[in-house]
Amino acid sequence: MSSLNDTPRGERLHIGIFGKRNAGKSSLLNALTGQYSAVVSNIKGTTTDPVYKAMELLPLGPVVLIDTPGIDDFGELGSLRMEKTREILRKTDIALLVIDAREAVAEDEKRLIRIFEETGVKYLIVYNKSDISQNKPMDALCVSAETGENIEALKEQIARLDVSDTEKRRLIADLLAPGDMVVLVTPIDEAAPKGRLILPQQQVIRDALEAGAASVVTQPEGLSGVLQRLNSLPKLVVTDSQAFERVSKETPKDVWLTSFSILMARYKGVLEQAVCGAKALDTIKDGDRILISEGCTHKRQCGDIGTVKLPRWIEKHTCAKPVYEFTSGGEFPKDLSAYKVIIHCGGCMLNAREMQYRRRAARDVPMTNYGVAISHMRGILERCVSFL
Image 1 (cartoon, helix red, strand yellow):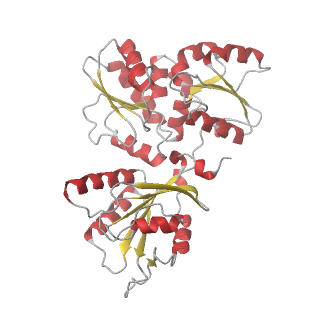
Image 2 (tube, rainbow, N blue to C red):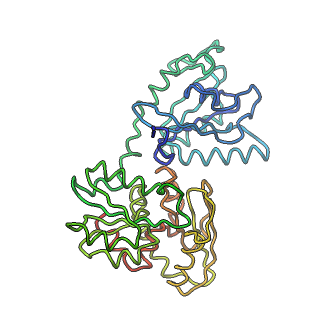
Image 3 (tube, rainbow, N blue to C red):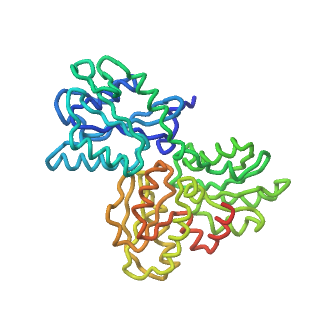
């Protein structure tokens, strides 16, 4: 049976737990989740990599808590751990700054507060170890991860934070009315996960149901037959971007057409930039560097879209031989100035805040996504975004 813990990480509010080494970050994570999710120790620097734990926190709903290495770590390994902490900050919707209640606020902690405020991250300052502190800060949230003191109060304060601006977009429901019909074209190939649909396809089906619409799912070769058997034309056809060429020819001109990837760009708030960025593909020359970036990590198949199909389509479109670089998961270069264009996946495994960070990072470099780029190269981009 499905549960809220099945909610994809990209759809959860991200709550990052930050602070100095041995401030009790891992203990606080365990106290908030009610589980022994993170290893705790009196030895400084026990947390070497971020620890993720999914839970439900009402009324916010599904969230993911992230324990991070200490912000005062040092040395070569300390620098690597701090880089991981900075990666977490990029995707953090709510930050908890954990301070040892026995100590004064340090410069590292003040600097982190300034970063929260500069980047618009909602945050709470949490003074931990109140059970062993003789001088608790006045008018502050003091908790004890060890005894559970004020943990419920902390949960209530987290839930009251206004993060509504991060979770209000819809994938498709706002385009549909009750009774509308949507046809979803979902190829089943070597790269498709066995026994299930890929995440954007699942999400579109769910969002269409919430709008009161009906969905018909077919593979590309079945589209023509489906359209003939329907009593009336569907409101919208949504296709996997790889099937754009065939689907666009078979979909009547008076039916809306788009792709899962384009809907995802709209959902994550990067569609406008992606449409503008796609034009850069027309100027690619031999030797230009193109970054192809995916938000998840998976085993590459022989016909992988990012490493095989996109380069082939780009070279056919441009008659050029560019140089490709590839990133996946949380990896995203700091310096993007060497690239002529960035082509990103739909970002279904990344939350909106992380995608917004990448959008801002690429402000001086054209950035598009798979579906937008492919529809541009097929000459149907305007059709696929005009109603969005």
